[in-house]
Length: 150
Image (cartoon, rainbow, N blue to C red):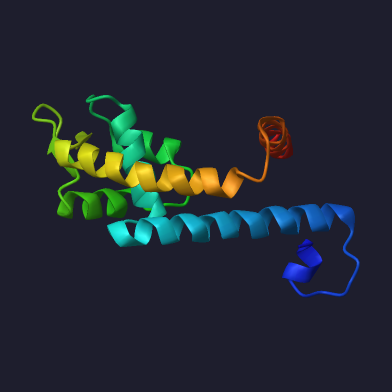
């Protein structure tokens, strides 16, 4: 369905506007799809992103600013996200004994197991979302989106 039909406009949109609205609309649609996959696990997309970042550190500690730099949603409140994950037992925070201002953050073994389980559902949905496109189309889409941000 064309974006004009999705947003219910009869106006002929200029090409640049149609492309941008379509990109934003699709981004929100994908976010909604991911939220629906994550909801049964009682985790947000931002919390999921934090867990993936921490797991990618392969057991090494990291800090809030490194997590923030690697977040997909740059406006996320990383401190709040980490605190919520601590309450769920998925992440640990340790204060450095020699520098009390330095906080080291780790994913727990429980967090790794939880993330592995959640990843199965997320990956299944990602495959479903992208199955209408072949490998070349997905590569082109990825390249076009990268070019748009350049």
